[in-house]
Image (cartoon, rainbow, N blue to C red):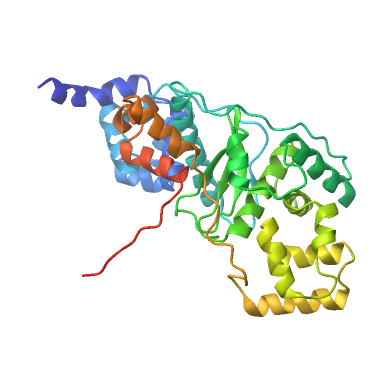
Length: 369
């Protein structure tokens, strides 16, 4: 009887503590338009807008229907977790390739993940944020980007050798790395700040180690170099790509290891050592003057014919593990999925989605009868 009464009273209590932003967050995560949501709930689209603007509050009955339509518990709207203060703008690779709804959904997932991280940090200590401060000249040139990459490598204590694991490096530096759920297929890797932590989102579609390493290094560039820059600029994207390439393989070391003629057997050895794609290595070789224009065009033509995966496949993409390990540690201290989900104001299923996004996915063996 008590449990039944508690469930019945939940919408009324949530309606009193209703947070307008939480409704917007849930709606964007589910990628439902206001008009569609209003139809499902039995109110007008204007009413939904008023709820999200804080101009009116939904009744307990309406709030219960909103929760059902958006597949979240009513507590999601009244968890007492305000929208995180964000610094800068999210750096999406191409604004033209994605719709606003797709970007909103990806950013909503990030904020939901931030809720989980916020609860985790109430019970355990995640790695402290330690990103170096780097100022890039306004009209940065190639040498400025390369110098910034060298400074960053030194700050991370990498020495002259390859980066062992790019994603682990970010996580150890206090960056939350998440694999995007398979909801917005056209959204590529991007980065954004939620509260006091930067988040990096990587795509599960690029199941290639070299490409995933470059994606992570590319997003590190945005975090270090483009704090207040307006996103979407191709100049910024080129700077981030150049920084990522130099961060993964400094010019001084790479120049001595590249074959002076187009030898893909030797290039594959360099690829395995530095974790850079053959395409990136050929591009760098051309930029450094190791390969002529003709050799560069011929190499790129051959790589285009071969397609993906390239020769000397390095294996599956690098994956995050921070949130998965944090969840395991909480479980050891008797913090159940249900209790953590309740603190975050979400369902256990949604919490599992977030934790899985921050965990190393183990390949499964399936047997057919």
